[in-house]
Image (cartoon, rainbow, N blue to C red; front, side, top):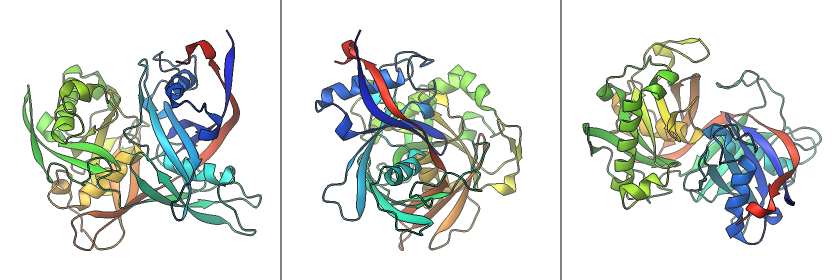
Length: 384
C-alpha cells in the first residue's frame, strides 16, 4: 500500500511530547487531517506501537502551526489536538499547557521570529486557537539563532535540566464558556454516590476541582492505587460528566462522554507529607496544595500544564474549593503558587486582577527541545 509523507517535527515541551505539523504541509482538505493525526500517533492501539505516540495522554498530542493573520504582536497561531489511546479520537476542545513552551521553541527554530545578533533570549507572542488567547514567552536562544536546549533549570518530571522558557497566558479565564466560573465559585453535582460540592473553573482548560476528603482520600495515595480503584475512577468520571453538562460544555451526558479532554477533573488536598512516584518525600511546608488529576481515564503521571495554570489561579480566587484549602497569603501582583503533584512540586506564577475577582496572567517555567524532524508516513488507503 502506498504511503503519504508529511513533513513534521517532534518536540518535548515540559512533561509532554507532540508531533508538530505546519498547516501548509497538510492536505488542503481538512476532512483528511483527523485520519493523518490518528495514523501518525496510532490512536487505534493502546500501545501506539504502529505510530509515534507513547501510549499515554501526555505523548499522544499534535500541534498544527499556521502563520499569524491580522493579530498584532503574534508571530504564529497554533491549534492543539489530543489524540485517543486505543480509541479513534481527535479532540481539539482543550489545550496543552506543557507544549506551549515547545511552540515557543518551534517559533524560533523555524524562523517565525528573527533573532537579533548577540541576543541570549527573545520575547515572543503566539496565539492559541483552542482557547482564543495569546501566550507570551521568553525563549533562550543560541548564537546560531536556534532555541537553546542546554541549561540548569530542572523541572519536576524530568531527570535532566534544560534551558528555562518562561510562559505567561494573558487573561486566561473564560476561553470555553465565556466566564471564569460558569457555575459560580462553587456548585453542587448530584451523582449515584451522593452530592458533591465542586468548583468548575474555565481557566486555560475547564477543570472540575473536588475536595478529596469527600471521597475518603488523604493525599498519600500513589497513582497506581488510585487508577486501580475502579469505583473511585467511575465516580470521578460521573462527576466530570455531570459538571460538563452543568457548565454548558455539553448538552447531555452522552454528548459529554464523546469529549474526554474537557472538562478535566482533579482531586485537591490540603498541604500534607507524601511520597512521589520517584520515591522522594515532599513535606507539607513545601507546598500550598496537593492535587491529583485524571487525564483520559487515568491518574496523570505528573500534572497537565493547563491544570497547573487553572489550579494556581483558583487557589488565589476566594470562594473556590481549592482556595478554601489555601492557608497562604494572597498578595497583589505576581505570586508563586506551589502545587504538589505525583512526581514533585510545580511552581506556578499567577496574578489576579485589581478587584480580586479574576485572574490576569498565569504561567510556568518549562523546558523544551526538538527531538527530531523529517517525514511522517501515513497509509494513503487509511486517509478518509
